[in-house]
Structure formats: structure tokens, C-alpha cells
Figure 1 (cartoon, rainbow, N blue to C red):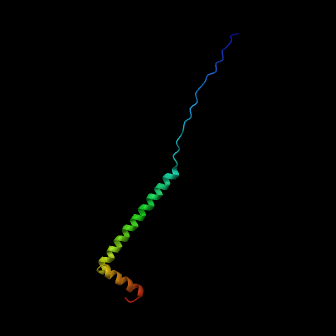
Figure 2: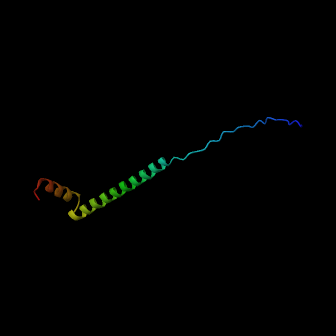
Length: 75
């Protein structure tokens, strides 16, 4: 019978780091940009409406006079 030599191999263990991309942070970014886009749209719409009111009444003073007249009921 032949004798077999048993050799113990030393292996070097290395640690690997797997980066995990969390999708929740990406969803927060999408929500933030969507909300910001709607806020900008509402702001632009408000400025357009205010400019339209200035043109329809004849200026800022006439607009203020019309506003107070509408609130007090004297129009």
C-alpha cells in the first residue's frame, strides 16, 4: 500500500465589499424633483395671472383699489 502525503494548503482569505445601491434614496430624489417641478409650475402660473390682472385693471394701484372694493362689497 502506498502512503499518500496529506498537505495542508494555506489559502489567504480576502474580504470583498459589495456596494448595495438603495432604491429608496433614488425614489426620494424622483419625488423631490417632481414636487419642485410642480412648485415651479404653480409659481409661473401665479406670476402670469398677476400680470394678466395688472393689464386688465390698468396697473397695480387700480388692481389694489378693485381688490379692496371686492372685499368690502362696494363694487
